[in-house]
Every structure is written in C-alpha cells, then in structure tokens.
Image (cartoon, rainbow, N blue to C red; front, top):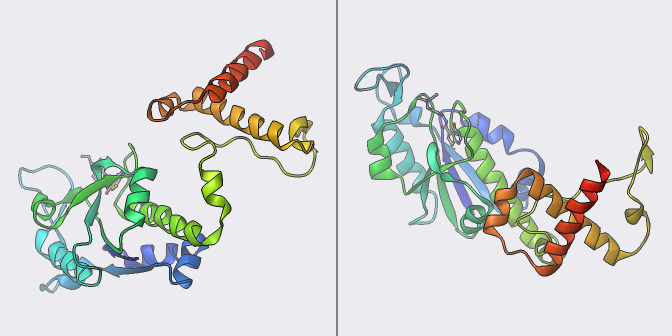
Length: 248
Ligand code: 9D3
C-alpha cells in the first residue's frame, strides 16, 4: 500500500512515521508513505498558500490552486482510482471499521488542511471523502492523518505478523480492554487478582471477558448498541454489576 500525504508540514509526517510499528512496517515494505507540499505548487515570490475568507471573519483559508495541484501530483504516485481523503473536523468519524476498509486498498491520498479550512471547491473537485478523528478542535489535519496511517499500518503488520491475532480478535471485540498486570505480585498494597495467578485458562478467560464487559458498560455504554451480546456475556455482565453493588 502506498499513502501520499498532502501537507504544508511534510517533516511532521516523515519524522513521526520513523518510530514504532509504523517505522517497522515501512522498513518491511508493507507500505510506503510520501508527502506533497502545496507550497511547491505556487508561482508567486511569497509562495502564498492562503488568503482571506470571502464574507469576512477571522483566520485564513487555503487557496484552491496550489492545493489541487499538490493533490494531483500525489494522486499520480498511487494506484489509479485511489480515494483522496481530506482530514476535516466536518468529516465522518474515523472508526476501526473504516480502518479495515482502507487497509485493503493499494493506495490512498490524505489531505491535511491548515488555517480555518480549505476552499470548498477543493472538496467539490478533488476530494472523495472527509474524515474526522473526534469531536475536539485541533490546529490542522496532520495529526489526524498520522492517526489514520498508524491505524492502517498496525493492521498490515498484524496481518503478516501473528497467527494468534485472528483468534484473539474474535474475543472481546467491540469492548474496552480488561485490566492488565505484571510483576510484582503486590504493588503499593494492591495485589494482582487471584484468578490470574492460578493456571485455570477458562477461569481467566471468563474473568477477562467479565472485566471488559463491566468497564465498557460503565465507561462506554453506547458501544453495546453496535454489537451483539451473547448469553454468556449477559451473565458475566450481570455478575460484574452485582459484585460491584456488594462492594460499595
Ligand atoms: C470556526 C471554528 N474553527 C476553529 C475553531 C473550525 C476549525 C478549523 C480548523 C476546527 C478545526 C480546524 C483544524 N482541524 C482539522 O483540520 C481536523 C480535525 C479536528 O480539528 N478535529 C478532529 N478531527 C480532525 S481531522 C482534521
């Protein structure tokens, strides 16, 4: 897979991708990331990429011509027909399901905006979809682009890496993680739960599932709307909530 990022801050993208899972996936040739700077598609001495908004108001808007030219140059380096996606606070939510879809493509162009936004005619002529990474205000699309790339890269790594992942992925999917512990057995007066120290794998499996269900119910109850709950899960969640009642 080849991803091209259109950005006024190409270094921000390249430097962040040198580390961790994404850096390794690139070294392994699982995917390549390139950048295209709209400033390299200007003709004036000041290399102007922004201008004042029609209708007035604060802030600046990204001019259409340099941005469209940069998107064209980036698109020419990926497979024909690859989607051109703009990172935008007005976009559809980026989800794990969206990450799965996109990770199967041979190419992708990500457009990161700066200033108050991009001229709407760029969206009309040169963008296939808009994605947001959450309901908070950031100062540009670069960090969201990195979020998308990270999510796709780890799916690629996982696909080749470990055979366990497919089995483990069907366990507690759509739920928050259960609590994790490592040595020492007691830390600051807090002990590792007994069940994790015994070797009963069925008891451990049920305890983890119960914790995942309970945390999800308390912290992110809306996640239960987009997921089927089995009879075992209902029983474990009821146990979790009952045990919590008798504790406090
Ligand atoms: C008039 C209000 N504007 C700023 C307070 C709107 C605004 C302009 C530009 C809000 C954010 C941005 C820059 N953000 C992004 O480019 C962005 C983003 C985000 O801010 N939150 C979540 N996902 C994304 S994806 C791109």
